[in-house]
Image (tube, rainbow, N blue to C red; front, side, top):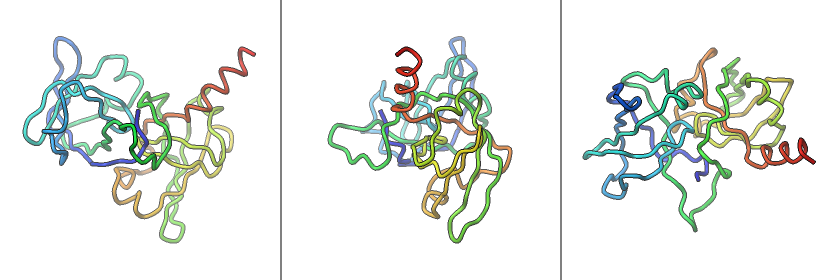
Length: 196
């Protein structure tokens, strides 16, 4: 489990197809002596398992299923990646409860300055859009955000300067693809409504 609060921006150092899946090596500022093999780390919203590590990098293996359902298939050497280590019991819950299971790929529609902040509008894939509600939570590339408005399959968020500067969301431009995870509560409420 995660909170959607990014704690490092990693960089893709190596991309290699293996006889099992695709392997990514990620450069990081994390103290890797505190990261065990088998640990879960969120990579732009996608929970992946550490399978190898060095002094300033770690490796993950990504299945075909994950490559098909996230934008990880687009990753090339040099790509910047939002990272978050798994939450521990007793940690501050600064964002919202995030599973690290990407629900779909959204697209950036527009970015508009608003004072020191930026209003970013995204298009969500159908039928995922029905789980997004004004003032609800959503995870965009691993970042916990509050939804400002929703109109059909388009939703908007306000990014304060801090979020713009300390995450990869500052790299966004219209047309960019982003990993989306809907609020866990919305998922269960919708399922309950369908089966009640």
